[in-house]
Length: 505
Image: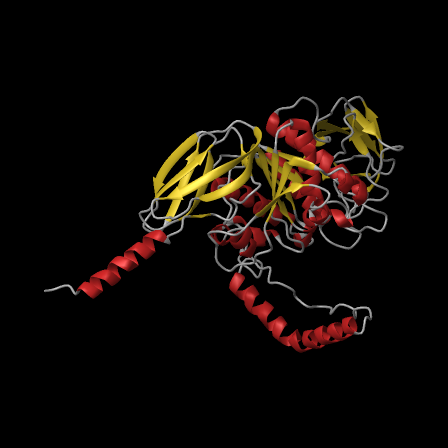
């Protein structure tokens, strides 16, 4: 059978076109201004034509792989030393016309910050924002941020924008991730990269993958069923859409007439934030990007009375699933404990769950924020500087072995001596301190668990608790309420506050 010359030319032309215009692609986290983690194998990955030979060059290393039948490729760089030199990652393919370049790449320490609104809270809304912004010029601090992505299925890639810290950029950064990164960079003296995946108003179930949610010990309910939640969400949107359309029209008219915007429409559900959707959209695309550790600041949207044990299970599962997804072993995990909140809820139980997690997990630390609440009881304390400094100290002690105490006093044990409860702590930090007056918010109870306010005093490394109305104490609590005010005041000599606790659970 003859092969027509015309068809041969068309096939040849198409072959040349497909070869010339194939394109090696990098995962979206590999973008200009990024920081690669030092001293650990660093994976770089993306897509290419199936079977295409992909070559990566960086810092004197040159490595090659072949794209899989599905087009996926991954190259692992040998551990790198820290470098403040802006260098280029070059990725080329034998069917790609031009190499892909990632510019201004540094090597140092990378941390992942995730959670909800107290992690997302912007510098522009924070205490002393102008002085923070004015002092922010630091080309060795890079912030990586992706837009919010709520997805029903896991995504392979998602663009991440990396920027160097400067007065022109930090105004739009989240306060805790930036202040944590800035403090860490100052202490370590190497480049630091912070990946920020925070999203306000989200439950922990949003950040867990579907398999973990499905196979956990908790009940399968409306908080784990994404299909059910999606249907409920769409029903609310449909019901409120006419009101939203009217609101948007009124808002547009007000702006055209240079009048203030009308009051926001109450009850509008916003973007869908159901179970698994943020794992799918913001975690799955970057899992495996080499990091030193993670800071987790979340729990407000879960904190319903009686659900603390469930949250402990979920937080334990989150730590396990993230560490598995990253493939680095049990990387350090710092948990920022919930502050106090004036509205009814389960905050005391959730602080307890976070405490118990860090007590059980061998490579974690707790950052206590009990003393940071304002008199009005707002959960969004605007001064993020103190808690960020504490988080830096936790990272230095936990991940880098720096000397000095990095945690506030943590309940260890209690003994009952007649009318007195004798409470012992770990993380004494040079000794216990009652800050700003006598110790507050200790309670004591007998076997009937009827708690009363108690007197408490420091004797060396212990706290002695008693009440004239309790002759045979059996249980003791410290700051175990939704909103202890004035702030709880047990600290150590290192200046770090104790976590709330109870012994009756």
